[in-house]
Length: 245
Image (tube, rainbow, N blue to C red):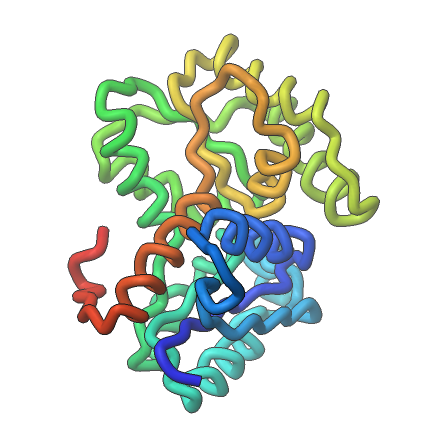
């Protein structure tokens, strides 16, 4: 197979399934051959990203992801995407392991947010404790020139419960809990836009999109960019990945 890309997923598998579903659903097609060519690596046994970020004595997710990147590089995909926001903690190390461009999901998401909501004043960020601790989204939001809010401990506890208790453990979506988080960030913390900094939250957004709040879904953004880049590659167009943000 030529002119394809690689998806590094499995963190978690439901979030990756959501990405693949949206990728196929949003790709303009009239026949089987119109869908994009890609390889999915659903590496579900990668150690928990948040646990390692908060306590480096816990198993690191860098070695298995580096192995995935190196294995896939031998197949020569045009680019790769990592379907886990928290895994971007080691983005520099992972990109250094290959010459194949790896799309930086948080950077891409905030770049799109800046274009879509240029007049927004305060941005809310909801994510795992690991993503909050590594400041990857926080720094992107600040660099884009926006104020931001992380909510409070009650919001973080509710976000963690939705991600882990409902989606990761039970495999279920809890729409009332998701809507309550968005409402709290909007009403209590004056957030014009809320960034979903976890792919499980992207899964929640896919399953329950009918709400009045402005959200930027990192995974949704990377779906659209995967389609854009995948179609350009199929047409034989060259992409300067240093200028995509």
